[in-house]
Image (cartoon, rainbow, N blue to C red; front, top):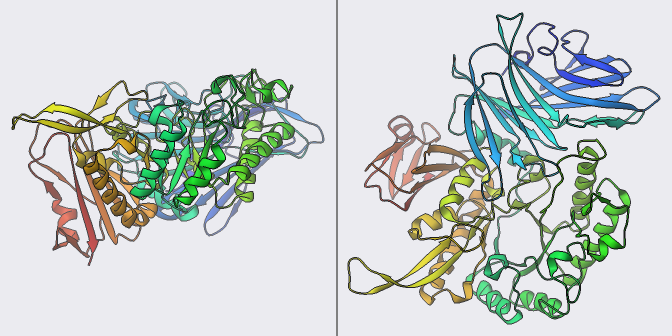
Length: 626
């Protein structure tokens, strides 16, 4: 796409230009002239110097038509300046537009919707968690020509994205999109000579209204930040939450090892002060010897390793409950009453040392970082920019010290599930709702922003006895899935649906696997073996939607060279017998499908028809290039 098309309007205040910036140095808005332009074969950089500050907008061309925009603000003066507004701006040709955004909440992650752009649409994060209330994505569809511009933000602060339709001089449409630091209460102090980095924006144009060109984003990301591994994990949380029993956990570990799992992770509840509930001791990363494992946590870790698995623990480094020793003994190191001030070197280093002590003591190879707290506005008025820089340093230092440590990101489910965090973490806890029905909806909307290999899929099942059989005079034993965060809502799905849902990213189990019926343990062992045979494909696969409705979801995964494609068809409750989908393949190639050779061009042009569709069922096609 032509970069100039993103800011080609005239010098109109509030509409044109590359930036919308204000501070005690003045206002920079509505300028398209005065920039110095530097071009290379794959980039163009615009530099504007005015009022003792420097603004740069660098556009770097990527493969497949993607462009990465990297903007900076630099204080050129000898004194600090204060920034009240700091936005990158895009300006598009006028017309009629629809806008796509995603809301984000606990157990309601990543709900995407289109709406008409009548006046203005705004998406922004609530506080320090970067996907709290909204996801950092915005797409604009020009209804006059069908072109869709998709923008992915890489948050490094409390962010804001807005699309505005404005008329100038009262009769002509102009469309502006602004991305940057949330302006509410912003008064960011920038030292002399300091450079502030605005959130990067990866953008593209597409006509793919279903997937928004997400497969190209996956390809870009995995080429630049390849996935290290796609493991099989056991986590204790949904076994019995924080009610930890040593003997029961050992039973789960022995079963997990026998089924072929690779990591065994103890979730919240292992730490704290004797005689107090763990929830009041968040921040004290030492074992509660009077509760949980009664001082046997190290023994458990040794036993897990003797079974051939790697050991992991849950932490919440950014929070310390007011009653914790960490909070009481370190005054001045918190924002509010419990948010660890990661902008403070002292506070960050203290937490870093505490986490490292636990990693060393228990020989951890896996860490799950959670974050169950936020505050809506930064009391330092920096839009959490300083906080996030400290947070990034914390994770980078940890990865440098422990390069083989596997890191999972969780923030009350998916409140930090985005591309910038994906550079730092191996994968993300999907949601606290791990059920396959809601789970597949959450997955398909996550795929619009993230590669599949970053999205953990968790099996949360229990056996139900005595279910009447419609066709025989006998009772059935069924595997039911938890479809919320508390085991209060169970659903039964066909095994094909559940197993397809679990395939595509890191595979997890969080339930009483030791009580699985023998027949189901055998099926689980077979499935994990098959999963391991295919996981290298999913570690590099791009994904796109072929169908997306309330009743049917069809996802295609394909390797970047189209050597292989896997299509998953999920049917909940359907009113049709057939559906034809049109996969992306290497045109001119021949593929092997169900033991027969098929021409890619035939599938591309005529599609593949799924027949005799059944409710509550999933179908999987595996196409391999001959």
